[in-house]
Length: 142
Image (cartoon, one colour):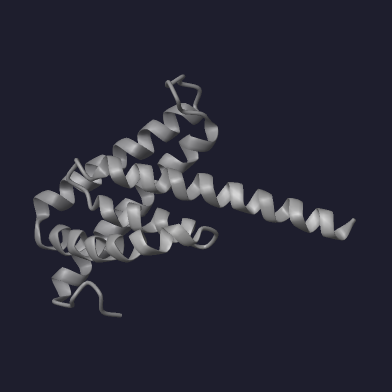
């Protein structure tokens, strides 16, 4: 029975990783057309996917490179940073609205939580990039 349980747990983990990684990647793709560093979320989503899916490893390298470029841009531009924070607040607001009972198409409680997490992640990224820029450190440094 333990072998069957282990296989079931592995399948559940694969599905959870696929859904979470996919949603983060999709949120990042949506942010590519907005003023935020969309590639940061794309890279985060691909990093999650790469833990279970080998095909995600190659695009992850490209996304990491683009994420650093996006973070550098947000770090240099207060307007980009403000736009990214505004987009993040919209994501968080939509997620909270759904959890509070507002019915939005294609959004359920799980995707609402992912929206909130994505927004908070984006705010953290902006704070990180602006802090690094203010202190004069390159984005990729420790």
